[in-house]
Each structure stands twice: as structure tokens, then as C-alpha cells.
Length: 342
Image 1 (cartoon, rainbow, N blue to C red):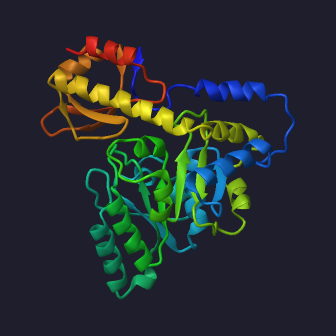
Image 2: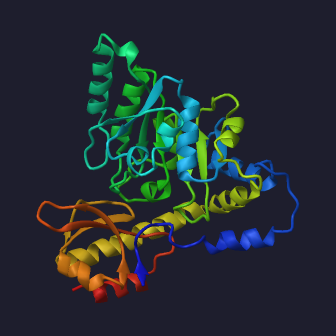
Image 3: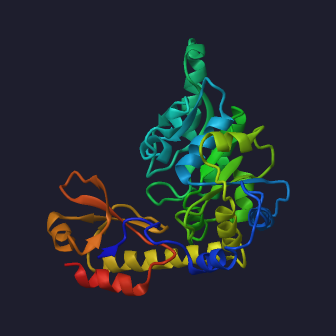
């Protein structure tokens, strides 16, 4: 069966597997103090052009979000997110499990608008009894969003300005960061991202690695004793080399960005194919996630032959479905999909 359900259906990029095998019998310290992890962190700093950045390697996306958000918040604070934000919908209440509420606000195609954020914060502090409420302690967004949409540089600058006004850190969940940065619609670079937020993640799980996310505090100043917090939250690997080898490989010779661009190219082919065959897009996503409206007959024709993600129901009876490409998607798979579509 063809599968376009997600961007982590495959294992890992061959270069990672080869490196894991080649270094398998080397003896290295644990918990991220191995030479591979130290090298990976240094490569990320150099790619950013920020030697002062604090970099940590964690096991996965949900563990990363819950751990870092909990470390940044006081006990009475919550995380402000778009109503469709990943931490608000698809992480099984992992942030709330740490004792911190997710405070949701309206969104537009998955994005949080600076005006909506400012209105929410203004309203919170205008409430006479705000001391009895969960305080907004940070702002969470994802790039790309859950709908494959991208924030522009101007939009991020506006959000960051509101965050600075209220002394809130802006946290960017970059589970699919490579696919966002390599989109031809992205108007800022990896280096420029550092000036647009206070902390962000670099997704490995969905961008060529077996597992793992890197967390970057681009200006330094990570929370005190974060290493201990990471272990307490179950996000620290004893065999930290597993993460180190992967990120060291991904950030050697620009591999992370090369394979991300490949996924974007494949998504462009899928989009063009659906449009050529007369299908309607739910929205115009410039990233590796493509959302298409399918009727019941088309879905029946693909059943058992093509896997995709059912996203939501359209008022007209059709279904919004997601086709996701990855670093491993091939033109042959797209051609096979086209042949199966009515």
C-alpha cells in the first residue's frame, strides 16, 4: 500500500544508519556527553552563526514540548497557543500533565495573529480578578503549522514584539522546521530565525532521523538545571549517542536542508497532480503537507490502496484529507498515486 499519512512513516536517512553502524562499537560516555552529541551541538551553533546558543537533544516531540514548556513556566502560568496548536490538540494533554494549562486563542489557517495575541493579553490584565486566573507565561506556535502554513518574517516579528511587550518568551515548535525553512514561500533563513524567537526546536523525527528533537536557546540563557529537568521528564537517553550521531549527520554538509527541500519538491508534484486532475485543495499549503477535499466515491476507490490522514469534515459532505511527503518520498510513488485516482 502507498502511504502518505505522515512524514515519519519511513525509518531514517541511509547516511544516518550507515553512521550508526560505523560507530557502533566505539565506547563513549552516556547522557549526551559523547563526542557525537557535542559535535552535533557545535554544528547547530555554527549553522545558526551563534556560538552563544544553548543546545539540547531530547527524545521526541511531545517530550520536548512538555519538558521545555514546564521548565520555562512558573507553577501558576500557562502556555498561550492557537486553538489548533499541536500542544492543544494532539499531545494528549502532555503540557497539562505537568501542571500547566494550555490557553487557546483563535487562529487563522493554523496561525496565531499578533493582534489576537495582544487582544488576549490586554483582556487578561484588564480583568480585575486576574490574580485568580492562570497567567500567560509563554507563547507557543509551530512552524510550519498543523495546516502546513507558514508565518512570514513580518508576522513573527509582530508576534515577538507583543511577547516582548509582556515579557513572555516566544517558543517555536519546529517539529517540521526543515520543511518550513526550505519552502519557497519562506522569507527568512535558519540564521534569521534566531532573532525572531527565544527558543525553538529542530525536528529530527519527521525530518530524516529515527527519533529525536534538538532544542535551541539562540541567545543562551536556558533555564537553570535544564539537564536535570529533561531527565526528570523522561526525555533524556542514557545512550545519548543515538541522538548525537543523528543530528551530527543531519548537520553535516547541509543534509538536513537538502532532504527537506526534496520533500517540498515532492509535495509540489502532488499539489500539481491533484489540481491537474480537477481536485480542490482545502487551502494552499507551501510545505510538505497538502490538504485535499475528497468525496466518498474517491475515498472508496483508494481504500486499501492508498493511506492518508483524515483531517476534518467539510460542510458540503466531502472530507479534508492530508497527504504528507517526506525526505524519502519518490516521484514513482506520486505517479502510482495519480494512476489510482479516479
